[in-house]
Amino acid sequence: MLTVGEKRDFSRDGYLVVRGAVGDALVKRARRAINHSLGEEGMNKSDLPTLRAQTYCRELREESVVTDLFRRSSLHPLAEDLLGVGNVERVKGGQIALRFPILLGSDPAPLRGHLDGLGSGQNGMERGVYRRGFSGLAVVYLSEVGSPFSGNFTVWPGSHRLFEQFFRDNGHEVLADGMPQIELPEPVQIVGRPGDAVITHHQIVHTAAPNASCDIRYAAIFRLRHREVEAVGLDAYTDIWREWPGIREAAVAD
Image (cartoon, rainbow, N blue to C red; front, side, top):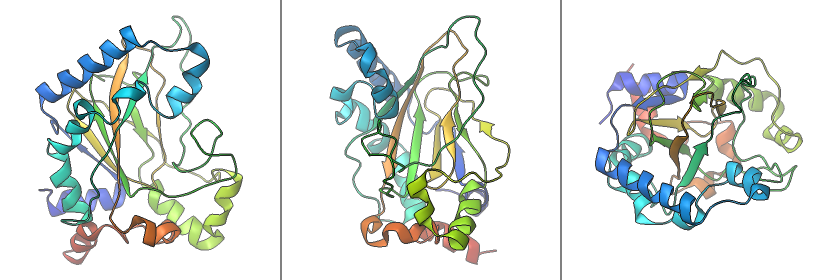
């Protein structure tokens, strides 16, 4: 269970790092399956933009070797602590998110964050379309990410609150034109070990940092859905804790 202080941090920052959230055996099992897929199934170069935007190793995403990272770890009870017991829909699949090293001798590109749910033409949604299909993310590191620019999951702390106010002032309809350009705080590249996880609000700006290390960064990403996510729909853009009773209760405890 999370402490009231951790929930207050989540409310302020929009994310929380959970060290050792997933056991070593589950992590190794998943990474072995991914490496087997890469060696046996391979990848077509023409598919790489879609694989980066959606998932690698498509045949594994709904297999227990991936879903157990969430279902059989501490992540499910932690999600219920935030979204409410019985409110978290069953996780049916995970995104296998790999970041390969950039070309030797090249400099990492500047960090550019995004909001999920905006159509890019490569993520399964047409440009100009936007939707909010989940309440939060759970990102599990499956490999060592010990320093910046190692493919780190990267967040812009507090951006969920900034966009809540922006959408209240301007309407979420502006998302049809892409992500609005507003002044954001400095990004944080999250370092961690295999089994560490990051839980985020759906409206936080995030990205994967370029990988200037010598190793592939392995991660699995799960989309957490409150059972009323479809009913709440787009209203959550301007009422960001509508599906988060654990956060609302922490605020009352202040």
